Length: 137
Image (tube, rainbow, N blue to C red; front, side, top):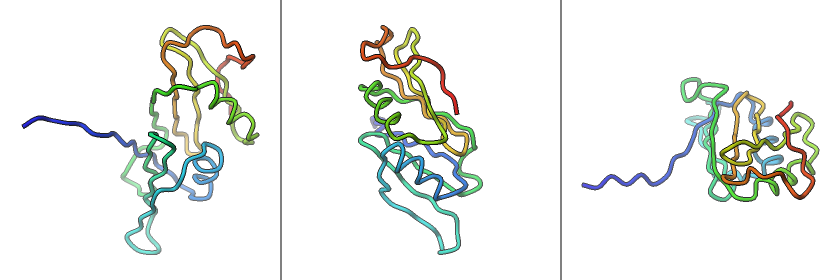
């Protein structure tokens, strides 16, 4: 039998649904695909997505470790940076970072989880005037 991995979906631990929606839906531009609770007063387990970026967010204690990191490749990292900067999200002002693997944008959600978006092979200086620096919160 052939092994065929189809998709990897990271799980991030969250503690506050309103803060999670503010970050993942309002700021990052994801859509809530579905939500699940075993009962009305139980913790939330939900899926959010934006294009091929799919994440599971969980209030369940044992599902994930707060402060986790994902690394995802994309094209258009400068456009994403500009889109997010225009939203004036009060808790995060990320910059673009460049190294030998490309240009990246690191976001930290309200629960300490990091999303590293990397566009490979774009380590040249940006021509659109975008600031290239580390991240700050």
